[in-house]
Image (cartoon, rainbow, N blue to C red; front, side, top):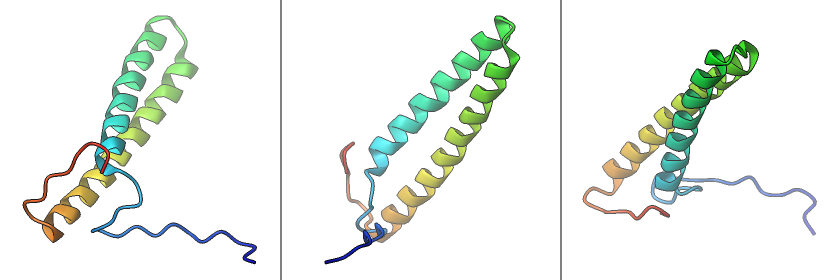
Length: 86
């Protein structure tokens, strides 16, 4: 009986997460955080606004990582079309 859970290992050919779906979620997070940060600054809530700006920056970094992984997958399997959930 194993006491520790095995760490998830993704590869270029078989990603651990659905990269296209993750891309969609990251875009949604970026847009929603940016809009809510703007609204927070307009309503004189700078602490909430800066927190939302920080989350938007995290979403941008996540978008960059996702795009790098999608390009690596495309280089390994050229011409393969993927659905949103692959």
